[in-house]
Length: 168
Image (tube, rainbow, N blue to C red; front, side, top):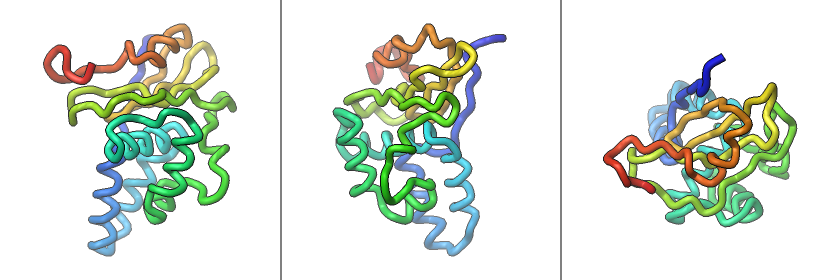
């Protein structure tokens, strides 16, 4: 088995909001379907919401409770509906469907320059079969060896796609 296995998601949190506006204006269901496809798992939903938080506040949330409050009050209802974010308790959203454990949410990751870096922001706690899923801004998801979890949690494994030093 080789690592990492990458899967690109369709849109960042800001892109999701823009797409929602466009799809709502055009009256077509296609934009809504694209949004749903980009937010099929809790990890994808949280990573996109994290990007939305960064875009609004300049850095990621300080803690999970701050993040939950933001999702409840700041993400538009239509976007929450399309992303399948519950309107009541968010506790289930913060749990990985694969390992049944709460996600690690990276605190206060600074907002990167657009296109310069992909940050690990939502990380499975336990994983399955010796691997964990790591959800990035950018957006993307990688399944990586569980032994590498701390490097992702600290930001040491953020992926710079621009010139050296960008976003770090």
